[in-house]
Length: 111
Image (cartoon, rainbow, N blue to C red; front, side, top):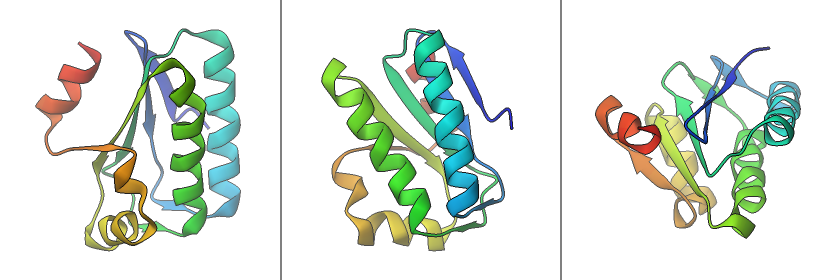
């Protein structure tokens, strides 16, 4: 799939146009591989290309929050259309993540 890359201990996950159960599982597997290969302290989910997400996308984010929590890592969300941002709010995921509003803010995380 190739949506994950690590830069300065930050796992950047560029999400596809649609995230359903199948896509979320594939992304989760790729994330797991990166966690075994690299030292990761932060995670950025890049939703800028994503137009649709079901609840499995929320599960993907929350799963990474739980994975990075023991090392006091942080999870960030970037992009996302109005529908996706509404899902973030309704799901309660915003209690556990930080929203990045610009590419500059995103670059500061992995600089």
